[in-house]
Structure formats: structure tokens, C-alpha cells
Image 1: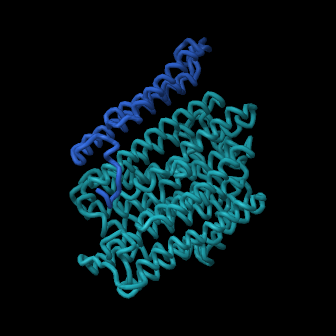
Image 2: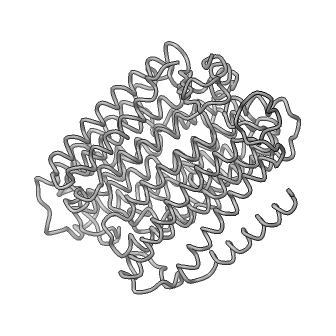
Length: 113
Length: 496
């Protein structure tokens, strides 16, 4: 199972990097989304898949799943959700102001605008 | 168990929420912000004296036993940094009254500042590695707001790049924490420190150490991942730039210092050697940038990069002199960078340009500005008895004690480049023929910009002259960094 998950994470990272390196802003944002998915799956994998019962402590349950990675993923999902929402709005606004979504045309400093 | 240490985090957070209401009433916004900052400063000063008397303060949320709950730890390093952060924020907000503009003030500028303080103070105080990630996100989210606030073309363009860099480094941070968790099985920083000593897996831990260096280095702007900093920081207005320049990179530096003194002490010859080499390369890259530019903002921005290199050089020595110097220099650099950005802001305001070639002769028209700039520049370089001297002296002594002779000489030589870059601004802007002057300068607004700046420069002078008096605090801070067992013992004991 760990091996399969490692491949899934790796594939997600690969796709994310491919998208982030493209020119279009929207593809880059989708890439960052995939990147965070890969990271979240990695946390899940790193917590290991041992244990069968849900992590609710009651009498007789000894073989329970590690609850901590799940808590971490939940936090990380919320954060990446917020950041993605912000960056989408920013991209929309930037497209309106700069009249382009091509990252190669967004170079330059104050002097050569 | 002492909830007191949470006040410098909770008070800015609380005030940020209050400030979200009544955004059109600027007087209310300003007074509330000042009140919140003063209140937080009083609490932070109380915290410093408490830590000085009783040692590190610990809170574990929800009264869980220690490795399980989220722990907040305030030792001398973090208490001092929290106090410095809040004092600088007060000066920057005061300076911003005259220069930030009504439009930004109406659109949650002050809330953004308070939230960023929540994040920065939280990152300095937390004792849980995943909680550090959360506080990083808090400060990054508010920095996204502040960098884009105003919606100018340059701001939109640069903030997209800034956000992308930080999103990627945040994903890396999560990945690194996941790796660390799979190896040590805990997230509490004190517990990690103990577990790392127990389990004998140096290979994977070195990988994690390098990953952490990458993650925090991206925030701290070390070589070779400082590329985003100069363009991103030149976009926002001066008060925001001063806030970012003084605080944000320093959070990264603090995190590197914390992880490299607390966790990764198993293979010093690899991890700290890498840190040493990277810090030297950072200094060199910063020096080249500082000399190459004729834009006053860019010159000071590249000086941030140099200072990051110098501080991390002190950390890489891993002896008491080096670490004490690093803490002293870190706080010095926060103060002096804020002061320099504020001075540069005034220069840009009175000349109406950022290009050094167009400036000149300001010494005749604005002599006080010239003298204060000169003092701040000497302080940046470390001319005794100004604030940079003792820190750099201790860092250099640490370097010689650790027998890194050549690299230490390079650090010393970098001071000359810093002097040259700072003096270049002085020579071009203040000496020579009268250059461009803005026609829109109002004496009243100039004074309102100048007073907080001058006071901050005076504060930096006192930081230099009063080092003797500050030494006990700095010694405490260095002791915690040199001997992690002080930290871990306090945390492990404090939760019971």
C-alpha cells in the first residue's frame, strides 16, 4: 500500500510541477492545487496504514489508526483551500489590470513597464 | 503553566478582528491599532522580565500532557524577538499614518498588520512544528493581503510571483513535517529533540535537515533561493516594505536557528557546514546585488540578504559566542532595517524618485535627514558604538573560535561592501549638486514621517550603547540555543 501511495504522490507532484512550469496563470494555479494534494497524501502515507479501528479510545480497542496525520491533513486542506481562493481572485484581478495571463509577459520592474 | 505568554499573540488577533468593523472611520482605526500595539508591547515586556526571572514559560493547550497537546514555549530568544517585533510594528504604523494613504487605511491595512503580528509572534513562540506551519500560513496570508493592497499594476504582478513561491515552499514544509513525523513520531519540538537523540538514523535526518533549510531558506532569502525577494519587496508601499524587510525574513532565520540548534545536532560536519557555505554565498550574492543597483529600495533590500547571511554564519558556528552574536545581530538588523526603509521612504518622498542618479544635494535642503541617515548607515555597518558592532564582533569571534578563519575574514570584508553600498546612497543623494526635488512636499507631512523615523534611529543608538545592559538577556538567549536541554527540560517539566 505504501508503495502504491508513493507512486500516486510522485505522479501528483510530477503533474503539479509540469503545470506550474507552464505559462498560463490558470494552469499554474491548478498545479499548486495538485501540489498540495500530493503533500496531503504524503502526510497520510507517512502516518502509516497500520491499525484497523477508528481512533476513538474505548475499552478493548488497541489496534487503532494514528489520528494525528488526519488532523494535520484537515488543517493543511483548509489552509490550501483559503490560499487557492485568494490566488484565484488575485489572478482574475491581475488579468483585468495587466490584460494578460501569460507569466512570460509579467516580467519587468517599475522602470520598464 | 502560564497563559501570560499568549497575550502578545492573542491581543493583536483580537484587535485585528475589532478593526474589521468600522473600516471607514480612520480615526477609530488608527487609535484602536495604536492602543492594541501599546497593550501588546506592555505584555511582551512583562513576558521578557518574567522569562528572565523564572526561565522559559510553557503553555500546553487544553491541559494535555506535554507531547500530545500543542505547546507554546517562550524562552529568551522568542520573548526578545516578540518584543522587538511589536515595538517595530508600533513605529511602522506611526510612520504609516502619514504615508500609507486613506484608501489603504479603509481597506483593512491595519487588520492586515495586526494579523501579520499574530502570525509572526506565534511563529516565534510556538513549540510545535506543525503549529509553526500554521502560524507561517497566518503571517503569509496577511502578507499576501498587505503586498497586494492598493492594486497597482506592479503590486499585482509581483504579488502573484510572491504567492506562488510561498505556496510551493508551504507544500514543501508540509512534506518535510510529514517526513519528520514518520521518523520520530511526534510533533512537539522538545520531544523531537529528545527522540532524535534516541533513534539512530542520521541519514534520513540529514535529508530532513536539508529540506528544512530549503523551506525556511525560501522565507529567509538565503542563496540560491533569494531570487524572489528583490522584485517582490519593491512592489508594496514603504511602510509595508519596512514591515516585511524587518520581520518576514527574520522569521525564516529564527526557524532555521531553532531547528538547527534544537533538532539537527547529530551531524554537524554536514548540516552546519552546508549552512556555513550557504551563508557565505548569501553574503556574496547580497553584496553583488547591493553594489549593482542604482535604485535606493533595491540597495537596502539586498542589504537584507547580506544580513541574513551574516546571522546564519553566526548560527553555523554552533558555539556560544557565535549564537549570542547571531541573536544580538538579528535584533539589531530588525531595528536598523526598519529605520533604513523608513529613511529611504522619506528620501523618495522629498525627491519623488527612487533612482540614485537623479538625486543629489539633499544635505543642504534636509540636513537632519542626512545626519540621521548617516547614523543609521554606520549602525548598519557596525561602527562602534552603534548597534551592529557587538553582534558582528561576537559572530566574528565565534567564527575564529570554530577555526573557520577564511570565511570569517570574508564576513568581515562584507562589512566594507555594506559600508560602500550605504555610503553610495549618502554620497549620491545627500552630497553634490542639487538633484531632483519633488514639488509636492508638505512640511507637515515630512515632519510626521520624520519624527517616528528619528526616534527609531535613536532607539537603535541606544541598542548599541546599552548593549552592556542588554547582555544578560542575550546571554540567556544564547544559553538556550547552545544547550537545548534547557529548552527540552522546561517543556517536558512544564506540562505536568
